[in-house]
Amino acid sequence: MDIPSTRPGSRRARALVAVVMAASLITACANADPNRDGVQRAAGPFSPAPQDSSSEITVWVDATRTAAVDAYRKAHPEVKIKAVTYSGGANGSTELRTKVELFDRTGEGWPDVVWPNVQDLAWATTGATPFAAPLDTLVDKSVLDGYVKGALDQCTVGGKVYCLRNDLAHNVLWYNKKLMDQFGYQVPTSWEQWQQLGLRVGKEHPGYLVGEVGSPTTPHVYFWGSQCPAGVLTGDRTVTVDLQDPKCTRMAQLLDPLLSAGVLGTRNKWDTGFIKEQADKILMMPGPAWYGQALFNAGYHTPPGEIAAAAPLKFAADAETWTGAVGGGMWFVSSHSRNLKAAVDFVTWVTTDPGYTATAATYPAYGPAATDWLAAQQASGYYANDIGPVLEQAASRIWTKWAVSTLYSQEAIYASTMVPALSTGKSVSSQMDVWQQAIVDKATALGYEVN
Image (cartoon, rainbow, N blue to C red; front, top):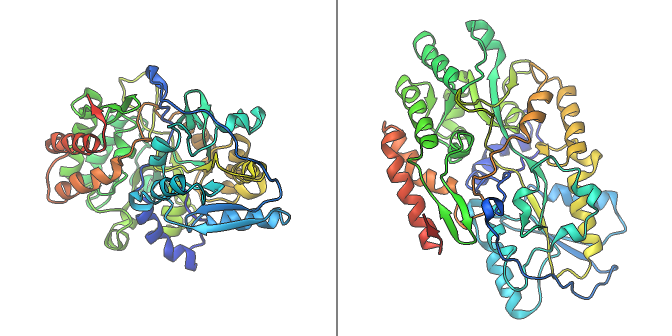
């Protein structure tokens, strides 16, 4: 999920909450390579359409990405480009797939470039003629090598790269340094320390929060980084779902005491009631790289000099630190494009150009662009510490086996099953079987063989 740049109090800032609430139902994009563990997903051969380098390119974007088209037009006035605004996969929309299937039947109408939903990877890279063009043959290797380690994993099918990542949304630990100093607390480095501090907060400072579990993105914040096999692709249409795995239950058992202590919010963090009543009570909040500006600055209007970032939390027993992700977008180039040169130049420019990406709201997936972006973040003077080293190190620590390129959305399933239960006082552990069955039912209904 790529969040628009905002200024506190601006019209765009006031609209941000609605934008993110809609986008939050899209399964988060992160580094989940569908070819890992021996999985080989069949992708058909690529035969370019007849080319015309002078033809207009059509770019499909959601409302937020229209700014990318405008920026490219300004930098490349010689390129004829038509922008079409569509759902972009919001709320699990299947609009792109439905329309591409129609275009496949009629033999015309395909856009040249698309901002897709992560679920679109499951169909757009397979079949006799995949909709997405393999970009490893169209983009210079030096450019592909410049993306953050692991950033293109989810775009890779059968050894071919089918999309360019726009941004990353890896999780870190956000905290209010002013409050932490005021209360005399040390920033935790492990999930166990976070839990113990949270229990102290419940006793010593009732009403303050160390996180929330009422948003659809909760699985990506807590269970993904715990390496929980909520969905691991083991074949093109085969998935393993095991919420009773110890790496799932350990997180549920960690969260339950904090729920009982009242230090985990059970309302969606973007809800008006949460913002009005609890936003200024956030002591800590595990979450993605974009929380700093989009959530705390534009959404909650937390004053400058208070918010800081620390490394993602790990379980003490784990040898390595892994984290999840909440968002991270991508671009497709259509295999039917008659102007691949312009289409490829567009997706390359909007993901790598330093002048454009440095001003974006989210962490760029392209390494050199990320460096400039972090410098711009620090120059803003908003943060209470240097967030650069933390975000840079965490960018390559997203656990790669969490399947996001499936036809179903983990976020939507969590929102319909777990959120209502937790809001009525039930524990996470008591609902794990219910949650698992909901995932199994949805995956099976969409044609997956579930282990």
